[in-house]
Amino acid sequence: MKDEIAAARKGYKYNMLENMKGAIFDLDGVIVDTAKFHYQAWKRLANELGFEFDASHNERLKGVSRMRSLEILLEVGGLSFSEDEKLQLADKKNAWYVEYISAIDESELLEGAKAYMEMLKDRGVKIALGSASKNSPIILNRLSITALFDAIVDGNKTSKAKPDPEVFLIAAQELGLRPEECVVYEDAEAGIEAARAAGMRTVGIGSRDILKDADIVVPGLYELMG
Image (cartoon, rainbow, N blue to C red):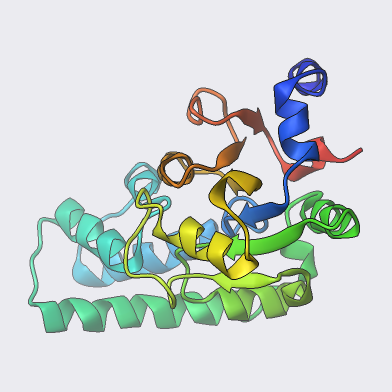
């Protein structure tokens, strides 16, 4: 991995990061790992509905909206509900999730995340959040990093889930930048696809095998320090 980053810094990929004017970060899996709390809440809902929901099923929920996540969960359980009932179930799951995340603090920040964003701010790079989460204000406040963001675009401002590029296009607009001036940091295939559809450059956080379409892939933001 170190060799990959070193090589990237000799050519286009390094210039890509050096010359960007805007950085747009996904939340879960990039800045903080709240995915475990989502999983706990979805699993709790599945148990209440009478079926098992395991980690392999949960992989299908990564990077998608709350209602689509519920639909996938119900597919796993072979259950169907009316739209009103589904809204009630989604609200119940979210209440449990909010309960879980209300106890987090700065210790939940992923390694290097805050330091990397602070470094970008010092360089004059504008920073935005581009997340499907509707609970991002709670999470950012609990992590004490809200002030780092020049724009916060989340599920409260969007109507289309990734891989639709809407969230990233709105973020660029709120930063006052063109898409090509922005770099997106994502840990999900759907997010990388959305960023590419928006005409933005991409940094994948995670595995090259999964995020093969990203311009650069690193295990965490700490790898980009320096």
